[in-house]
Image (tube, rainbow, N blue to C red; front, top):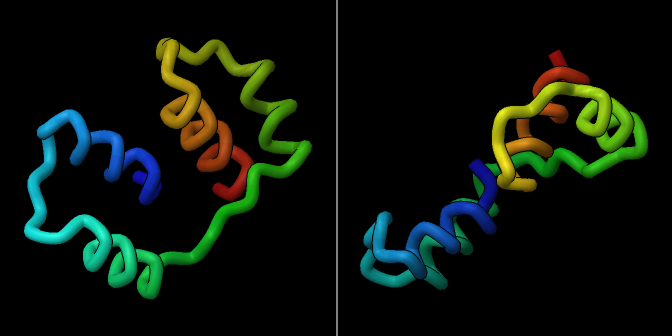
Length: 67
């Protein structure tokens, strides 16, 4: 899950944290970025992805490329 996805869920009230800004700072310190490369985009466009949710689709394509 990306920080962006978590923040979206926080805004929707599906995840609750005391201070979202502090949470983001701590989360980012513990994460490794996975850039959205041309290869990931090509794989993502070629995969039959069941979601109409770009963050989920890009996560699945990233996992396929990096695995």
